Every structure is written in C-alpha cells, then in structure tokens.
Image (cartoon, rainbow, N blue to C red; front, top):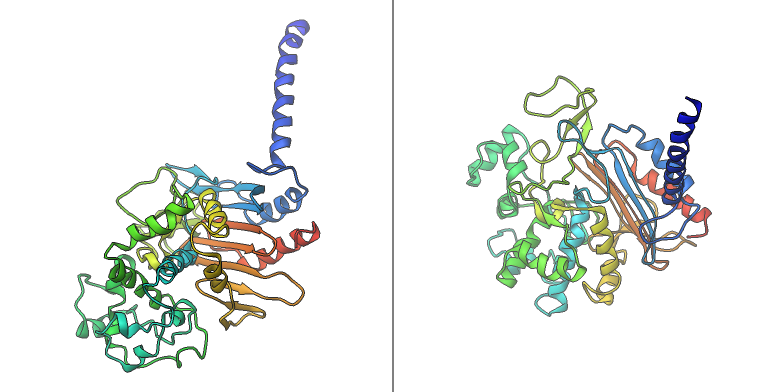
Length: 405
C-alpha cells in the first residue's frame, strides 16, 4: 500500500509544484509587462477593499507606456444563477468617463472646421427661447461652466408641472428618467428662463447640458450619434468591446451594478442570496440611457486600448487633446480643476494628473493618466461603496514609493 501511494503521490506533487510556480509567476506579471514589486502593495490595498469573493468586485490595471504591470480582478461581475467572476473582459458601465468619448467626438468636428468651441448654443438650438443661450458656448458646456440648471423632473409634483409645458411619451417621472433619450430629457431647456450663474464664472458639475452634444453632432454630420462616434472615435482606437447601452443586445460578459441592500426587498429588483446586495443599474437607476454623459459600456482591456490610442494621436490631434487637458476652471477640491470632459490635477512639484472619478447606479470607477510620465491606471468596479479619491491617493503613494511618480 505504501508503494502504491508513493507511485501516485509523486506525479501529483509534480503537477502541484508546476501549478504553484505558474501561479507565483502570474501574480507579478501583466499580459505584456515584466515582474514588478507593485503587486504586493496593490494586492494588499485592493484585497482589503474588495475582500469578499462572492460579492461585487473590481478590475485594477496599472500601465507604464505600452506595458501592463498589474492586472487583477476581484469578486464577481454578476451574482445569482448566471454568476460570472470579474475579469478584464467583463463589460462595465464607465459612467461619466463616457464624457471623454463625447468630447473627443466634438473635437473631431473642431479639427474638421465644422464648428468652434466658441460657438454658442443658440446657433444650434434656435427653439431655446432665453437670450442667455447666445452667451453659452460649447466650451462652457464641456467644462461645466454653463450655469444651466438641471430641471429634469424627479418628483410627482415636478412631473405635473413639466407636463403642463411639454409632451412626453412617458406616464411618470421615474420612467422618463430611466428610459428617456437625450432629445426627450433635454426638452426642458426650451422653457428654462434663468441661470444658476453667469456662463464662465463658476464651475458646477452638470450632466444635463452634455445631452445637447449628440444633437449637435447629428445636426452637423447628418448621422446618428452612435454611428458617428463608432466611426470617428471607436474605430481609430481599435475598440471592439465598447458600445452604448442597448437593452435589446445581451452581452455574455455583461456585469451588473450593485448597491448594498437596504430595507425590504423589492419584488422587481434582484437581491443576492446572502441578502447583502441589490442590483442597481439599467431599470433601477436613472440616466443609463443617455449616451453623452453616462452611456458607454466597455471592458477594462478595451479601455486600456482607448487610452493608448488617445494619447498616441490616433483619435484626435495631440494639440487638441492638450487643450482638453488644460485647467479651465477650479473645482471644490484643492489643486483639482476641470478641462474639457476631464478632471485635471495640477499639484506643485508633482506631474499633471488627468482623471475621472465617477459612479452611475451601482458602477464606480477611477481612471487616470499622468501624460508626462505615460503612467496610467484604472479601477473599474460594479459597486459604489468605496472611496474613489482616497483609493487613488493610496495608489499614487504606492507608485511614488516605487519611483514611478
């Protein structure tokens, strides 16, 4: 019996040794990058944030140049009967990082001489009655300095007032907010009669003015917004896993967004079997159907391709990208301003940091690049219950400790 056990034990031990070596080797390597000491502190950081294996999770990728030095997945992309582990091939919503794609599409038209960022909104929307639309430029819209209010109705009373001035195919405000397209959701601008502040004098993050950009692109190109963006933005970047939300098309790798469960379970909302998570994306949360500001779904690996293409000049001219990465206005955060569709952090004695920190429904992301150093990282999560700016600062500290920053 001892001889028989040893006969089978040795091959098994050999196989286990090979597997352990393979696992050890893969822990310190990305798909194209060499081994790095970044893995240990980054594993510790994100392993503590996304610690539950059977909970919603995240993908973290760190790059320098064209090399991926860290690529880890944590937790699950989907819970329930069709459970799916998180990976860099999972399709997630990138929330307000969608604005970068919209901005670059508009800048393509600038590059072609079809418009300028100093064109005012009245030029494209003569139906907007208020005289101040002649003072609001496209630059104001892209930099969140337009002063326009977001008067989309959110309550029953607001909905009743809205219907006194506008027709709608929707019967109630929640359906209007969840399923309305840009032209529907931006219709309130025709009757807006006051601004929150004079255009260009203040910064106030506002999604609603971005809803006008697809309509402008369609006016000037004679094409549907999605088709224009796919041709002029997605295609030059080589994106094959990036699209706008289409609820009729089922991605086998589609992630769901989740939020910590609270209160009684709703009959129409999935709650995880352990009772900790409620699904919170298309159908449960607002504004997933608006393409310009929140509508992009992509995989982390495709987003990496996007960043490489954007900063190598394959999407728009480098000079135009540089203009988008300049601080046009300050925000409520120290040393953080806003350019065109992008946050810009200019801290004394540190390299410029260009980033998005955003959430939509149950999705939360942080993605950033240091253009001068060609260092980039992303954190794509399908849960919003983590501090994005604080986490980014911790990643920056790790990179700085390893002489990357």
